[in-house]
Image (cartoon, rainbow, N blue to C red; front, side):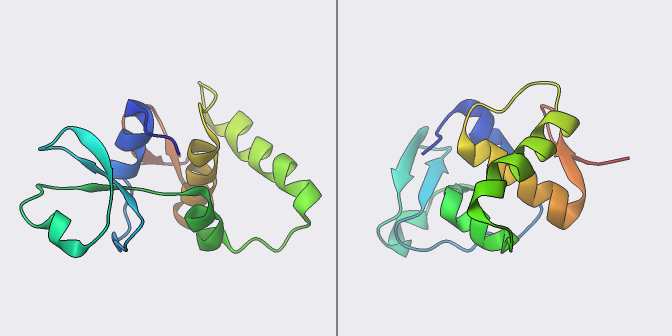
Length: 116
């Protein structure tokens, strides 16, 4: 699970609703650490928690209908053509694919921007 500063920032800026569920990884800004959500009481008093998406959650968002052996090439095409810096983790790669496919947005290092 990617808990890097870059990935936390990428997840913080996603334009879709956060649906928290037990087992999710969240970054707590007031506690300045990554926690696993056990129950929703953890969110009480937690100012602006950021959900860190797992690979399986991101894959589910895309609902890809391509053979498994072609998945690498699919992801490579998204990352090589749209970024100045190569992603540091599989979570970053999958999030980039979701954002490009669903919202036509790319990561510029600070935020998700419309792909021109």
